[in-house]
Image 1 (cartoon, rainbow, N blue to C red):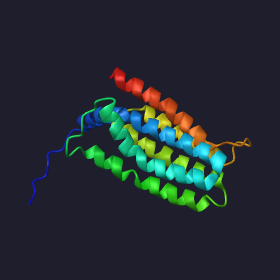
Image 2: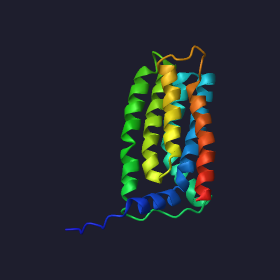
Image 3: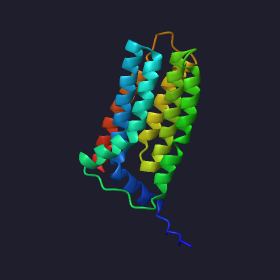
Image 4: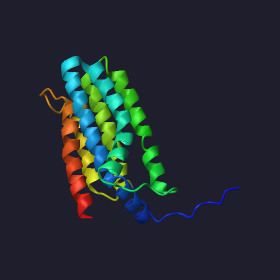
Length: 184
């Protein structure tokens, strides 16, 4: 029988995760670029093509952010047994729920489909506050959820390409996250 590994203190696990993923900034940057691409494709080729862009691009966020962290920022790998790495993986379940609901809405109301996914992504970012010990993730999560809710609840009468709006917010927040990470 394998011996249980000693538990890593929360603050040490957060510091290690933050170093390994550069505070999460590369992932937010890549996600922002994917959302911008999806919004552009939606506007030029239609909602199904934009959604496919978001889906395929979304699968590239994690490997792309790891590559960017290692190659550009020379970030170290995470030590085996960091309990927060599992939390990051487990929080992806809400993404799949959001994707399923968004896909179901895609034919009847594309704007609602993208807005639903924005809310799901925003909700997931709240977990990143704990993963990286970075309060800016609460702001990022709230902004994305608010963008999605504004469309879902029809708080605005202006046409909004929510994918482009999410991408813009993520790019700005990626810059802020990177600056804060470098100051630490």
